[in-house]
Structure formats: structure tokens, C-alpha cells
Length: 117
Image (cartoon, rainbow, N blue to C red; front, side, top):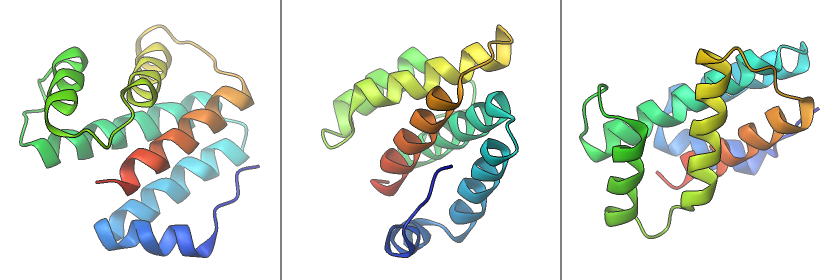
């Protein structure tokens, strides 16, 4: 089970009130054992927020998103971003079934990256 501290949640709320709901929804999927949905939900949320913050369209490919982030945001861990986006694609398009540990890692990385936006 993934636990988030109250302080961390409050920090994330500052960026967007809806963000806390999204993270809680992803955590609920994780707690229900629906790891693939937790990963898809987290990855899509991260992707959407990144595109929004960078002013890119939804049709932007993940590779182009990563290049834009690399050029504009030195505070973002690109390896974590790549991991989240890759796992999201695997679960969405390849019907990959992640382990609980993989899903927890995706949620953790998503929270870290979203908190920097």
C-alpha cells in the first residue's frame, strides 16, 4: 500500500486542486489490485500536465515531450519521466500487467514529477 504524507499532499494541491483527486484515484486502483489501471491513470495524468505546462498539443509524441522537458526543465528527472511514460504505454497498448512494485514505482515517480510542476 502506498501512503502519502499530509504535507506532501498539501504541496501538490498548490499546483492543482484536481491533482490530489487524480493521485488518490490512482492510489485507489492500486489498493484494489488493478495495477495496470493505476499505471495508466498516473502516466496519462503526468503526460497531460507536462503537455499543458509546456504548451504542447496532446498529439505530441512522448519522445518529443521528453526532448522538450530536457531542453526547458533541468529540475525534472528524465529517467523517471521515461519510465512512467513507457510503463503507461505498455499497459495501454500492449496490455502489459505490471507487478504491484512496478505500479507503486510509477505512482511514486508520478507524484515526484508532478510536484515539480
